[in-house]
Length: 219
Image 1: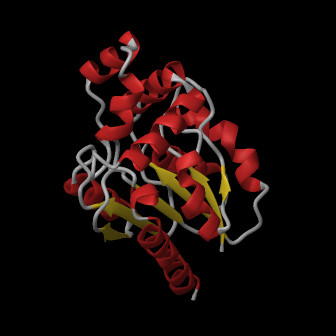
Image 2 (image 1 turned 45 degrees about the vertical axis):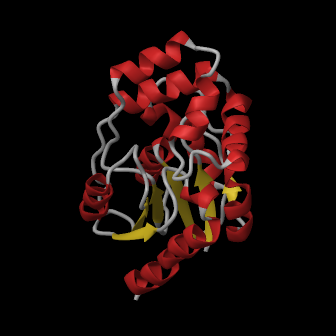
Image 3 (image 1 turned 180 degrees about the vertical axis):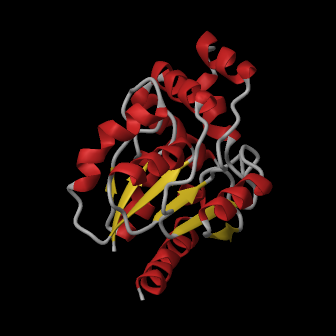
């Protein structure tokens, strides 16, 4: 299985380094486009260049983009991390990011973690956000707030990966996403909204469950 990682909003993909290496994955950060469908269209040629069998691994906004890419490029599975069937973004969050306070990236880096006091993880996430900048983060999250998903026909084999300490996307939303796609929900203990960074080995094991599902689907 060949893996393509689509990171989340405002991410340069740096936080995927360990997990992507374990998967031998191509990492394609989200384009700076105004909506989810446009992001998917911009990524589609690079995804199509990856030999089959290929799996899309999308995180949060990247998961929504992966769903749209799966409509226009044949894929053999999707692993959707830290995501629901659509993800709510409060207006107050968008206003806060638009104001760009001095501590914006520091707070963004810590908010999603199970252990907000883990200095190494906070620093890694901050560097990842800083590589793209607050303006891209704002455009990405605005696009996410406006996106309303629908199920590809037919849906590809799917695994939904839930960090058990995710405060941004609740368990019920992860479960709904798995149910809509006819996939399986896999929990990752000790992780929040960034299980690929917090618990990379467990996250890789969860993603690799797709290899069994894709084989079962093909047979």
